[in-house]
Image (cartoon, rainbow, N blue to C red; front, side):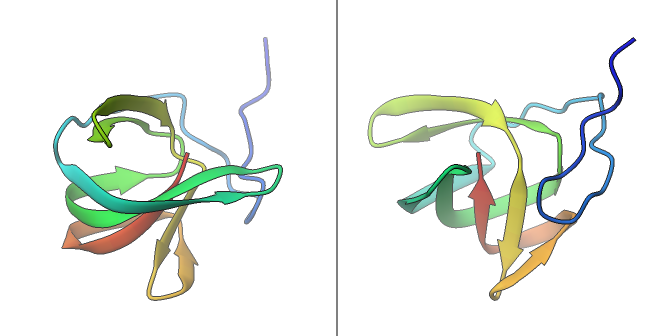
Length: 90
């Protein structure tokens, strides 16, 4: 059996249960993080945590990936509940 994956930033165990959210995230910008992935920044509404599967539209493309990081007001968090502007590392 494969061990549970760990968050490369905080070391938390990532959940194997994955939620998929479509259209609850409306990114308006993105930037690459070397050797990590892409951070998408925009308005999110709902519940999200590290390890979740996320599906959303960005620049006329459907993006589908696993959440590797969540940033709110320049702070990394393990989960987010609510409505607001956040950054999500995929």
